[in-house]
Length: 390
Ligand SMILES: [Zn+2]
Image 1 (cartoon, protein in one colour):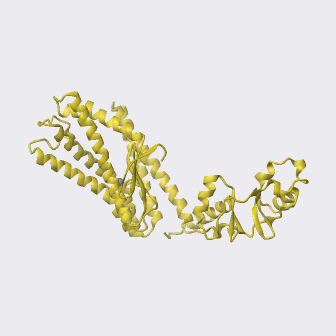
Image 2 (tube, helix red, strand yellow; image 1 turned 60 degrees about the vertical axis):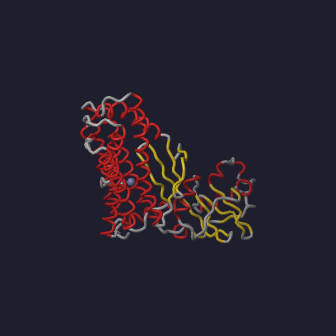
Image 3 (cartoon, helix red, strand yellow; image 1 turned 30 degrees about the vertical axis):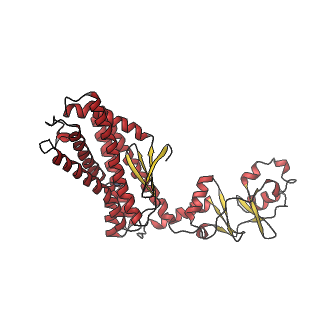
């Protein structure tokens, strides 16, 4: 994520903060210092309200960090590398290198997050009862003056209930929320169908997203402007995350385990660098229907020449210019036949390539074109429509 910086490392996991985190830190501190704490615990000084509020906001984020660490540590125990945890506008996110491979691993990984929030809730509320037995345990829920007006009691009560709410919110059974992941793991475990499980859980995620948006808009019209905007915003975020999870999954699914070899054009058109460009245009592009050729001399792969290279040359020079002058020479991006197709796709997307030469022992054995990939995707989608395999 852009705009993040590292604040430390825990158990080999980099902890980063996105700049939007500061907005929410200020917003939460402000709303506590101006609203919740003065109305529930009257009679403190302004400084006391602000200090308690800032500590509350910081400890809320520490709680979110504990929640994410629970996910990440379980992931690591399941041999899934965790790159980092990032705290941002909507809380936290663990950046895992891959998805869990079994429904059991996914279930436990997803469930420990809300479970840790729930445990934190019991710890904070338990501490409140121990420290101040006569204080109102429902102060945050009821928003009423609590009787005992002590900043420590206020902090514990707030953190207890906010962690409880975090657990409940994350248990909503819509993907990509934790509850949605738990649901996906259950459907996946029962049916053995990962794709179907993701689709159902993400569709429920979208429905919840729309419900939040609707409820937020309702709040805005009934005068609860800030809350309404916030709820609608969360709904929008949930909805679009569910949508893109679906797309990403469809995409990944079709290319899972596929090698470059299966998709590439074998025996690509080759051409000698000493020939004139007109030769290339007539034999390779116009008659052969290719958009690129491998430039080869004495069995050695020298580079590629494409339609784009030719377009830069004036038509009157086609007969007098050799291919060598306009071609793209080695070193260029290339892949091997038994490379994962996904790795090749990343190269194509990252560098905006139209094709990648496929080399084995420095000899050209194929060309992977965008058109090859699109054709493969279309065919695999048509065949996959009735295919219930994982
Ligand atoms: Zn979580």
